[in-house]
Image 1 (cartoon, rainbow, N blue to C red):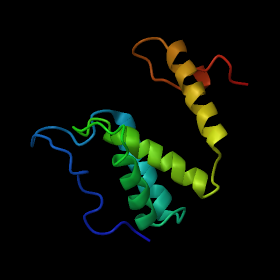
Image 2: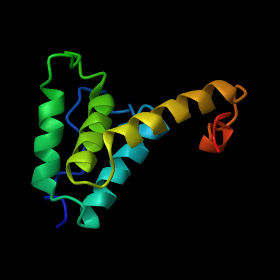
Image 3: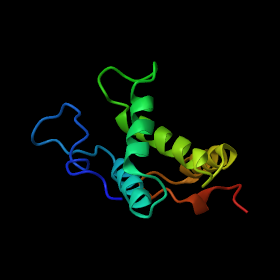
Length: 120
């Protein structure tokens, strides 16, 4: 099932006309990942909307929406765990691996998971 018409538009965050929708490249990648997983049938768009809504309405959500894509990722992670695609331990392990890779990557270079010094 494809996202409903208009679902791929700006997330509704306040922004100026000349501001990009995505502040960081990872945000665009997270957005594309959710759309592709939906297109592949991993979850239905209403399931995604419910998961994202729960995260956006969590008590720790920033009132100005500045953490919108952090909640986007959290919703995606939780939905994939709920669907049995992955486990919360795997998500946590990968998050730590990315952090280690980021610390091991010289400034200005792309962060690659291969840069994790503990990667086997």
